[in-house]
Length: 293
Image (cartoon, rainbow, N blue to C red; front, side, top):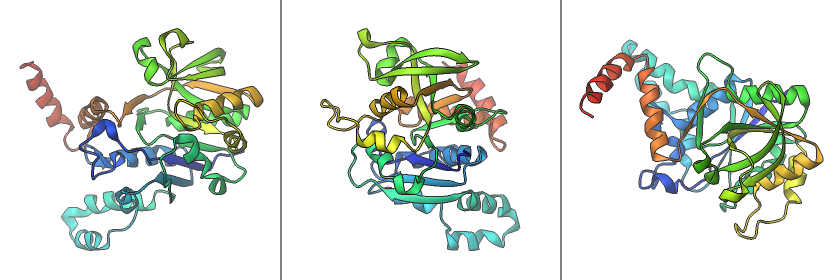
């Protein structure tokens, strides 16, 4: 079945980037001249997604405003020929896709957020693009599109993974995988935030997932993690792997962690180097700055 719908969980508090995220949603922090979440939506749309549900919570109204009209601003720019590009740029997020919003009134974790989207998804497979992760694949297939292609071929859930340094695996998760085809692997187990002796491999899930509709019933029947006090989505995916099978794709692309200060700076630096307006000047600046380091 063709995948038409996507979920973007964006209800996190952004504690790792405080104080910047105190009054501005971390998903709205800019990469050069666009907020991070716009890059994520653009990736989904480029992959063929038609309907997107963004999960927010209190204090994140700026995300909704960004994907809506700003009539005074548009009217001011529309009749000014020198501002045409800016006018086109601010209209782009308004018309990219059918975008809806749902508030997660209590921050009970990713599994709870996904469970709340059951009525939006219905009985269809769907994509999940984590709101913290901007992932690019310059000149190639969008990362979520790579996962969608694998799902449509094998009709099994797919998680997007990369190998991370062993010292960083404990920040994410560790997967038990076996090669299947090309960059695709079968996944048998996932350990969330493993201790050193629990690490199975250095493959971790990084920001992109495609799930079958059966995941909703599985979430409902996943035991609460006693330490966390919530259902871990990774625990639900382990149950999915045992029941229907699960794939892991070592995707082609570069991931930027926008919930992390260093990730934000890397994204801004690398995107600025490719920017059509400032790229060359910024490159020259970096070269001069490097001489002083």
